[in-house]
Length: 380
Image (cartoon, rainbow, N blue to C red; front, top):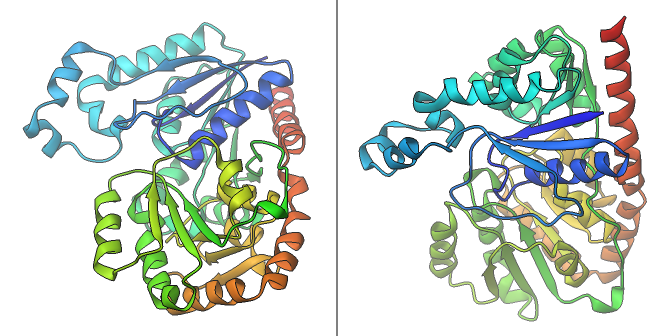
C-alpha cells in the first residue's frame, strides 16, 4: 500500500512535522510505501532525524519566478498567512497540477492531510479511487467561531474520514459538523530510558517561538519565584519569530537563571536531565512533547488549554494544570514541585503509566485499522 502524508512546511520545527515523520517511520516499518508531500518550504529549514528517508515532494515554492518575486518587500507586505497561502497567488494552479499528477500515478493510494490548506488542495484533485483522510491537529475549542471552523466544516463532507486527536474533540467536531469523526493519538517518537540519577535542578520548555506558545507567561511566572530557588534553572529551547521578544523579556525581568537554546533533535537528552517540564500555551492539540515528558517520568506544569492537554495531564496524574494566562498559579505550581521532590516522583511515575496508548505499535494499529475499513467500504 502506498501512503502519502501531507503537511505545511515539512522542514519547520513543530509538532505536526514530528508526527508526520514519526508516522512515516511507523507505516514503512509495517511494510508500506510512504511518500511525503510538503506544501511549501520553511523560512527556517530544520531537519528532523528519522529512521527512514521516504521520497519527498514540494508543491509550492519551486519556481524561479516565485523565488525572485518573494524577495520583493512589496510582495512580502501584501501576502500574509502560511507560506502556502502566501504563494497561492503565483503558484496554486501549478501546485494542484503537481499534486494531481502524484495521486493519479497511484490512484488507489491513501493520502492523509495534516493541515487545513493541505486538505483543501487534496479535496480538489484526489481521484475517486484514492482514500483521503484529514487529521486535524488543533482542538475544537481553539477554532470555534473562526474562519478555520468553517473551513473544517466544509471539508467534513469531502473526505473519507475526519480524524481528531482526542475523543472529546472528535465528539465536538461531529456535533458541529454533522459528520462522523474518529480520533487517533499522536505517536511517541521513541522508547524512553529513564535514569533518575541524571536529574538536574532544571525546568525545560520546548517549542516554536510563536504567540501560540505564550512563553511570556512562563517567564513572568518564573520571575515570581526565581529568587526563592537560586539553585534552579530554566531552559527555553526552540526558535521562531518571537525569539527577539523572548530575549528582550528575559532582560526586562532581570532573570538570571534562564537560558535560550536552539532547536535540538536530542529531546531525550533534555528530558533525561529535566526535573520539570513547563507548557504555557494559549492553545494546543495533543502536544508531542508532553507525551515524551510523560514517557521520561518528568512531571508537567501546563495551562489547561485543550482536551489533549487534559488527557495527558491532570492534577496529580502527570502534572499540575492552571488556567491559561494565570501566571501566579503557574508560578505556585512550579514552586510546589520544586520544593517537593517526592511529589515530583509520584506525579512523574503516575504519568508514565498512561503512555502505553501512545507507543508506535498502538498508534500504527489504529491507523491501519481505520485505513483498512475505509478502503473496504470504498471497494464495496
